[in-house]
Image 1 (cartoon, rainbow, N blue to C red):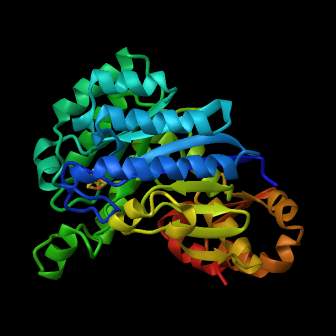
Image 2: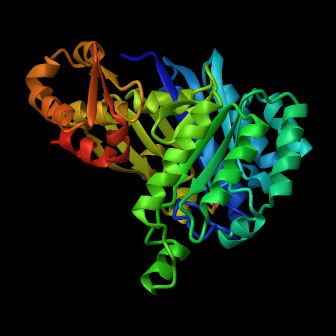
Image 3: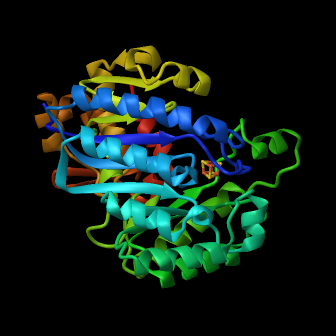
Length: 379
Ligand code: SF4
């Protein structure tokens, strides 16, 4: 059994809903923050007991916007995590933030509780684009709080960016990347905009009022990001993620390497002991359950072995280093070639996969057509 586990904590509150967002997050629900945190801390305590034999090697507080919580509530969560889990000395502790919600007191509190990785959702550097996305912050907010975090000793910062935005020009994307490279964060995530049906943009699209980037432009912007970031010593280690050496996101790496994680809070997903499930997405139900794990767990699923093989491969192929055949065989005690030899041969012939000694990786063409490759491995 894996002795380590990663923890994910979900905070489903935001100041305002961004136009492209369909995450489990709500604005204008501030009165529910305190009862939510009460339920969440009860859930944390229960998992503390259930997971007492495991070391926690990563914690990720995400959302929503964790930094929108009042300091006292955020401290309550941090305190409960500290008191209820055995935490590895070299653990990675990330908190997601919106640049418009940071301040000195908050950054100080996070440091006090050993948060050692800050993730900032900047998305773009043009204030007119930020406004058109419904973001609550400006570039100046980012600049001020990024440098404040640096002065306060944060040495591992991620910046999230989005490309293929409606009406975004190539120059605007290039300017965003150049600005960020100059700021030198340790980690940069670049996501291509996906128009989700249940977002404001999704509704505009349905009414024919949204101008989407073409697939050709989307790929051009992605290739440009890859080129300029790698030229500037950012290692492209996962489809959408780049980092300086040694600053890959350990929390996400564990997920891509098929390691166990437990999610707490509204709608949070867990994968542990060959089982997968998620918490209820209903905020009132979550609060009323007062964190009782058995009342909020939904869609509990034991993952059949054939599905585990496929998931292990397609998650691992997200990493540019790909998967090791030896690791696969020692994890599942079965011949990789007997299961997937023919498929891999075909995908190599099609130029989508590359084989390097013991490893199988996506080619550059495969990076663009990753979903087609992944589908090949699922039963
Ligand atoms: S801040 Fe993040 S979670 Fe909140 S609405 Fe915007 S994109 Fe969604």
